[in-house]
Length: 148
Image (tube, rainbow, N blue to C red; front, top):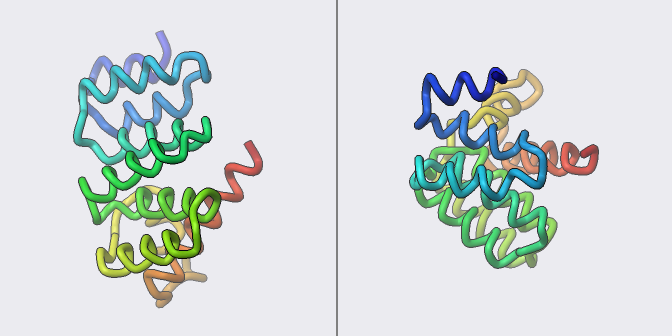
């Protein structure tokens, strides 16, 4: 039994584990893992963002946008969701949609998220604005996507 399977047995309603399970699964299993995760945690922004990322990878832009939007509405304090939405808009959206996302993120002032905190709290980013941090995290996500 894998470590992920054991973790999900111990904490079956963990949105963090379910989202990680979706993103680390082989592509052929991702759709079924997404459906199961949504049934278990329909309002967890990490699960919703993971599903949105799948739609974005499949170039289903309208669906991806809708799911990313749902994630930032569910938890406006989750910086990772904002960064993924912004990175998606940089790739698939217009200047107008990019600016709207950035303005909404600035007003939400997110403070949580694994990648958000890692980048925002690094010494080189101390004292930067929310907009600058959003750009940095989104750029990091886009760089990571290019490597995969």
